[in-house]
Length: 339
Image (cartoon, rainbow, N blue to C red; front, side, top):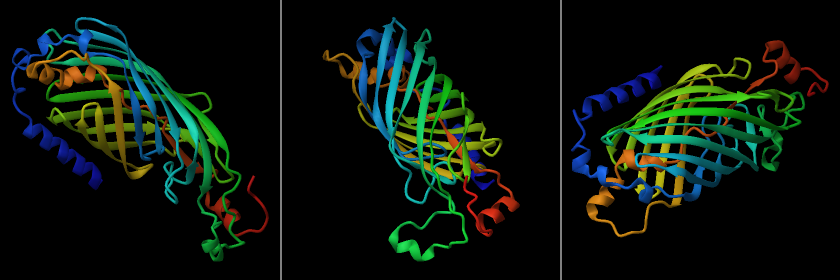
């Protein structure tokens, strides 16, 4: 409950400190003179993140591909391929079972973004498909296989065994709105196919349906602070929970963004992750005035070619079945029940 109150207080502070109106209108800033056909170009690069609530450590490549650019709009595709790495030792991203490396996940989006008449707001919608093959490793109770821990081995405990490789997939959709001061996003992640799968002798994993809303405030055009709410369900009900999210993102250089995210919900408890996105390419190489360069850095213009967010298939695991009798059989009674 305390994390919920903290984030609610942070959100109220953002509202109180927000300016009554943006500093200057579109004409003052110069965005009406920006040519989208010159400023929106293909962009390619790298991205990576540390593990979070149901999401893996990963690093990969990605690209933004404008298919059609109009005077005030862009129709685009955005694709990513990521190498999913192993979880940090002893710290599972899905709660009980450690994710093992290396698998390759994919994410694709088709989207449409447009500016309103005075270019003070950008609106967008995108949808796509995400895949996640997943290898599994150790699980609770951890087997002390490393030599320095073998003195902790207890023959009476039925340690988790028989790790399996599984595959999850989802469809996703997002709507967004961005001004020089505020940004809003609503998204849905909907797994399909075999969404509940056995991971090892003790646990099964489930891909989570996730529905969320984020509200952000640009402290400066380079720094964005946001708070969000999400609801998740899946893993035979074990993952069902509401959650809150806080994020701070920095555009540390042109086409380089570093961010940190904190989440809290009853299924994963508190989680924190960091991410980095680097893109190359972008606008025209023509010489620009200082005013034009500043106009192209306005959030509603930059976000026309930004990489969409919420791209991971989120997974949670639970014991099968999680009952006192089952646990006594697993830990105290003789015989191999690990099937």
